[in-house]
Amino acid sequence: MADGAVNGYEMDTPKNITIKGILSLLMESIDDNNHSRSVISLGMGDPTAHSCFHTTHVAQEAVVDALQSDKFNGYAPTVGLPQTRRAIAEYLSRDLPYKLSSDDVFITSGCTQAIDVALAMLARPGANILLPRPGFPIYELCAAFRHLEVRHFDLLPEKGWEVDLDAIEALADQNTVALVIINPGNPCGNVYSYQHLKKIAETAEKLKTLVIADEVYGHLAFGRNPFVPMGVFGSIVPVLTLGSLSKRWIVPGWRLGWFVTSDPSGMFRNPKVVERIKKYFDILGGPATFIQAAVPGILELTDEVFFKRTINILKQSSDICCDRIKEIPCISCPYKPEGSMAVMMKLNLSLLEDISDDIDFCFKLAREEFVIILPGTAVGLKNWLRITFAVDPVSLEEALGRVKSFCLRHTKQFERY
Image (cartoon, rainbow, N blue to C red; front, side, top):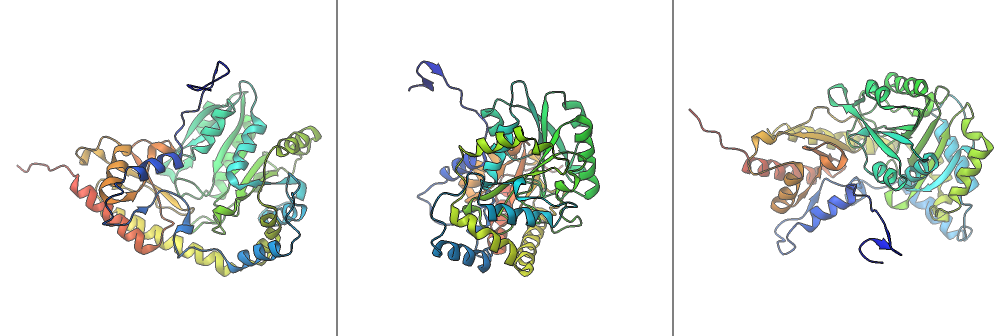
């Protein structure tokens, strides 16, 4: 094996940008010999790095109990433990006008694996998938490996990052297998209204395609719109719901996700479809069995106070983020976040000297100020920035103060007449 070839066959590696890939490059660009200041990352959506974010004791105790019971050291069924599937079905059904069954739920290793399952199940020669821009680049990467053509529809910042429904109608054709909706939004921090989600469902039904609803940030909403699961509209259009414990319970390292067929009309209950999904899960490795076994207790016993505390911290940190950005002339926030853990900010390069684009901005910021921010190019919007605000308030204030200093230092000096 040499030069990307195996047995004389040239292997193409997708050239898609990944969030972890570019954040790693930004970290590597920092001079290790300069320890005058600590590195502050506003790039990765992992709140566990900050002491103000921690999971509930209920979750920890449920895992310990499952492990110490000595009952969950073996293999789980490839689709997940029955009690775990049943508990997730009951949890998700609380917000739906119909009841999910355990047969609708498949356990995955985090939401990322659920994304891979969804695209693997839908891929076929000539197929295309509609993805939001900006969005989550794992979808493009999975699509590239599955040879699925990607067609992007824009999210509209002037309308709270709503979906451009006219663009979806123009992009879709008979080979469109799905459109992807991320709500609450990553990277934009938006939370869609009931009315907008219904319009999306009606548009998808009109186009005879299904909806993949990425709800990994489900219930992390702190603005005017409450979180509404896309599955509410499952009677209008079939919905594949993807989610996990990661964000709401602040345990991304536990890798406990789900792939759910939210489809009361029963399209996904076709025996051939069910068999295809089950066989694909036979080749996957799901979460550790003892983590799965802890899920029923976690979902049933977590107190609402825990959720409210997380929401309050996120609201406070998002306010700090937007307030401090107002002090920086070359960065603007067109839409204040109402959910998730991230927000998109627009760069005004005309006010800066020796900064060529968003990638150049982020690399120079990392080297000069030891602050990591994700360039918007990584999520599909050149000359924007994605800032993760799931950071303790003191570190967030410090990081944005450094960003302000950086921008002032690189601001063009206009002559006065």
